[in-house]
Image (cartoon, rainbow, N blue to C red; front, side):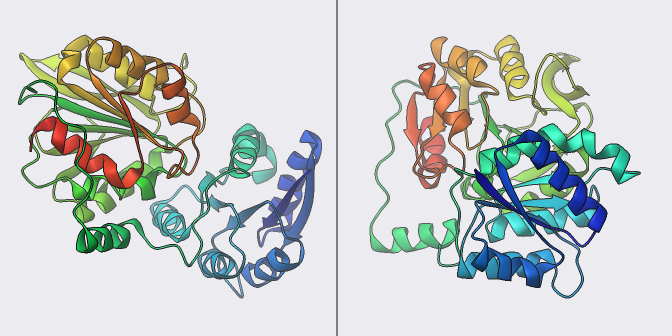
Length: 355
């Protein structure tokens, strides 16, 4: 049985979430009305997973999360509103150690709970085996600084042939992605010569605040790919939530587009669709494809095909992945040129690009 602690100040929301788990079976449920009760129940009930609301009286979700991670780290799935404020609070929670989030249904909650039921069950079950960052865990940036001060980093795998100056990096990522990307993209130098396309599974209201946040952390320019724009070197394009990022051509120039979600694919922005699109417009030998933490298999087939046609691919290792699903699927298909922990990925990309 999976022990789940539901934390929400709304009695209706607690009751509806409980009904979802009870109907699914294999769950033992306990409830808390605010952050203070959540901290106490985490100690007493010892849940396998916590679903945690952000806005609550007496103690909010962010404060409760920091105390939970300090006392008894446990996989936490945040329950967030679909607003910019909700997005920013969610990113803060992910940095504190939450492994994932779901968005609250809009409108009449009792009528909309079915919209998130399947997602809730998938994410809570997936969180059970997730890697949890407790309060004693050093941040990636701090660990990288300490490693550089001690000894030079291990030499990345050498380039086996010349790489054209007009190549492309694509990244697919899901659960645990925001904090993982913060361990890669800010390490790319300001003169990095290739565009970078990132598909992070995220709702539409979240990707613009996420791109803006990453833009403050990176040497490169980071933008949400919300409208057709030419692909420029040294720019990171974040796929718009609620859409699929693909390549196209206009006036003889390559552009990046946000197309309506293709219902053939399960996850969005679709990593698989992005990878197939890249194969249409780029010589695979000029492509580096990076598969990071996440549940499912999105992008595994396309990235394996990129490698088969002469491209280079990186799969994040189980050692660092919050959820090893997507990288494991790529590896199982023979699609990984190399498997690396997150702290070595940026250096490997730079070595292959030759910068």
